[in-house]
Image (spheres, rainbow over the protein chains, first blue to last red):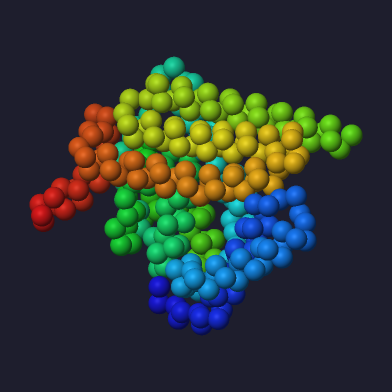
Length: 169
Length: 116
C-alpha cells in the first residue's frame, strides 16, 4: 500500500504482456495470424484499461514467477493435506470435529497480499476465512488447536505468510 | 508410449478427482452446520474439480492448455465464493453448530450491529 505507484508506461506494458499472454492461451492451437491479431488487440485494450488493472506494473511479472515456483508447490501440498484431512473427518464414523471461530493477526501490509493470504488459508487444512478487519482475519476452524491469537496465526498462516511477504515486497 | 502413459495418468487423476468430489458430497451430507459443510464443499470440490480438469486435459491433449487455464481460474475464485457465502450467512443470522467454541467472530458482528 505504501509502495510508490509504478509509472503509467510501466503499467501499460504490464497490461499488454498480460493480455497478449491470455490471448495466446485462449486461442490455443498456435498460429502467427492469431498472434498478430492478438498483439493489435492487446495494445488497444491495454490503452483503455491499464489504469484499472494494476498499480505496481511490470513488477507483477516477478511476483508471478515466485507464485509459480515457490508458492504453488507449497500450496498444492497444503491442498492435498487439506483434502486428506476432510476425508479423514468425513469417513470417520464418530466425526471428531471441534469447530470454532478464531482470530489471527497478519503482518502483511498490502491489501492484495491479504486477499492472497485469506484465499490460501481457506484451502489449507480445516480452516475457512470468514471475514477480515484491518490486521485481523476471522477464521472458522474445524478442529480448533489454539485460541490464542499469536499461536493460531503461526499455526494457520505461518508457511504462507513468509512467501507472501517476499512476493509483495 | 508417452501418449499411453499420459493418458493413464489422466485417467488416474480423473478418478482421484471423482473420489474427492464424492467425499465432498458426503461431507455436505454428514457435517452438522453450514460452516463445516462449506469447508468440506470448498476443499473437496477444489481439488476434485482441478484434478478432474487436468486429467481430462491429459487424456485429450488438444485441451490441455485450456484445462490448465480453467484450473487456475478455479483455484483463484473458489475460496472467494466460499468466503462470501460464509460471511453473508453468518451476518444474516445463520447460527453455528452448538458445539462451536470459541466464537470470536460473534463479538465483532455484535459490536458492529451495536454501532449502527
